[in-house]
Length: 322
Image 1: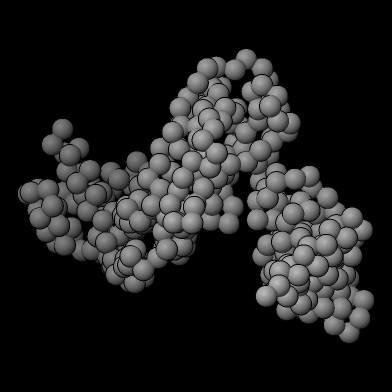
Image 2: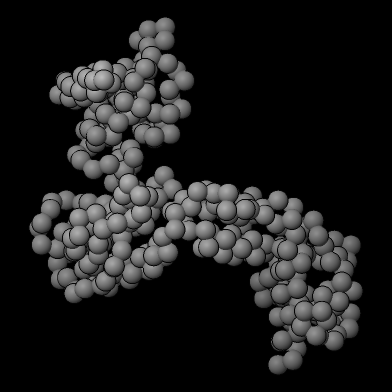
């Protein structure tokens, strides 16, 4: 048992303190084992431990009698990307962001954070204080697994920047999928009582007072969450339709692709004029056209073009009203 404990301690030292740029000699491994685990072993034992680890699937590489742990699941660049993603996501509260980043960094050696300069100041990031996020995800995942209806209230921000009960109503839905898009987490759900048709989505960080309810017995249709979200620019509701836009600046393609994805058709029809065909809900296309009104015009369908004209007239009247 003592030998097994020492082998594990040797592995933990190599995991924590070594990487290809920071290799350890046998003497350094012995010293770290003494400091961290009060182990008292000799150099001959280290060679046996490393051999045993390699024989059991742990890749301990060496170079001129210096050793390092070479079985990490993630590259440094992958962990760095995940840390920045957590940091940039406003839906993840500050406390949990700091904890997640620390857990990610601990997957690498102690030198990782120092080398990558990943000492984030959470206070400088606009984070939402929704402590229910992970609690909600756990409950929704459990309900999906166990075929349960869930009950909850839906909250939105008011003029005082406080999350308040949107309409003081208890929702009851059958959760079917969780997805992430544009740094936000969503639950896809269907109605347990035909109160609404098809699929609806809800921001998980807006859900409060969640409770698991009764078991449902009917069959849930297969739903591909990311196929559902693919054409939903800004994750707005409504039927997916095809639209034709006129774009008068090639610099708009960055914005259109960032918001609508790569599944669009672009045809050049003039020196600096393009026709773009895409699929999306009508409300998303109108919002996109309003955002970049100087460069984007809705061409088809006519009903959407006329709706846009009416909204522009109403907006112009508001600006002209003194």
